[in-house]
Amino acid sequence: MTNARNIAVQILKQVLCSKAYSNIILSMYLNRENLNAKDRGLVTEIVYGTLKYKYTIDNILAVFIKSNLEKMDADILNILRMSIYQLKYLDKIPEFAVVNEAVEISKKRSVKLSRLVNGVLRNYLRNKEHLPCEYKNNIIDRLSFEYSFLPWMTKLIITQYGESAGKKILKNSNEIPKITVRVNNLKTEYGKVWNELIENGYDVERGTICKEAIIIKRGSNVEFNPLFKKGYITVQDESAMLVADIMDVEENMTLLDLCSAPGGKSCHMAELMKNTGKVYSYDLHEKKLELVRENADRLGIKNIICSRMNAEIYVEELRNTADRVLIDVPCSGLGIIRKKPEIKWNKDERSMNNLIKVQRNIMMNASKYVKPGGKLIYSSCTLNKRENGENVNWFIDKNPQFKLEKLDLGDLKNIIYHREGYITILPDDNMDGFFIAKMMRFR
Image (cartoon, rainbow, N blue to C red):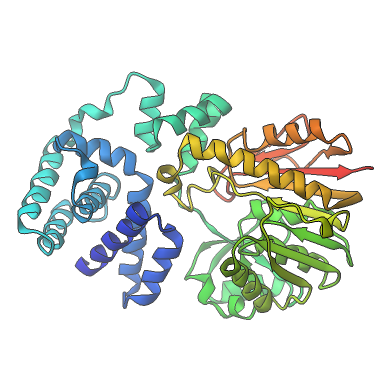
């Protein structure tokens, strides 16, 4: 157990101090370290749980530590954070075990600081029922503490979606996401994959809305399964699957994906065209394009062409060349916090506002690549309306040759149908938060 918690401390330091992506760094450590299944589960739970509830945990620690938390030794602070997480949010681990383990791993760093850790945790246990930080009069402060969001982010969500829907967004952003896979119809059939997953001990259910989707409710890491390695399935959230599904893709089309890495949507478009036509997948970083190529190779896709490109810079050679252009724009990611909880702490209002200019530049360039009669698809994994509907409305006002097409995906409680025609998908049990707009160029 001590080794598992030591690894959790190292991962938290990488994410919170060095801005590493939690999913990538966690996967790296779990693949590198020799841990049994129980310890792998513990590391994952502690890392994601501590990241999710960092704001609440830091408010609790501030009651017992009078100095500035950010000036503390990073490892000791993260040991305290993950210990408070276990004591407050987990009930399977005995309190004495959490405290003892925290003290032991602290001693390896500083005997003196291990006494601080012991004192803070025992003080918390004595006073946990009557913490002054839990009593908030202001609704924004109260929700921020309950769901562990920075107040500015809580305010943004409540202001844009209202208190009832906003609280659901905050709550669902802390839920543990299920894994969803997309069946690759180039190589296999849905029923065969379904049956094999069940035979392999997976608890599965059909996707909420996408015909290629299978939701993994329980089971081992699907990326180690032969079905994944053979390219019969790929991991992709249903919200992201919807993008290719609504593009009205036909065989032998020319498609551009301007912000393509890691390639899930490019590969889905290629599959829908049955390996005909061309999918030109672009990204700013060559390393990320390698992920697109790897995914395409694994899935048996032959019609994807990868090239490095900055989507903010106009390319005359692409003018009027594409039947469909997808821009899954860089965004604040507020719809995928449940998968990348560090988004809560890595974003600020200024950086979000700066993204809007980038998104609009990309949209203006992308629009010039669409043939008359072709379609431009704008998507993002954020819930911030300024990055979504307001951007699209701005674009339509400036480009009368485009008009929005109404999207209709049926009666789902987590989909908001806007009168303009685009949709917002709210995070729920099975789907990430997402935004999709489809625009046709008619001249």
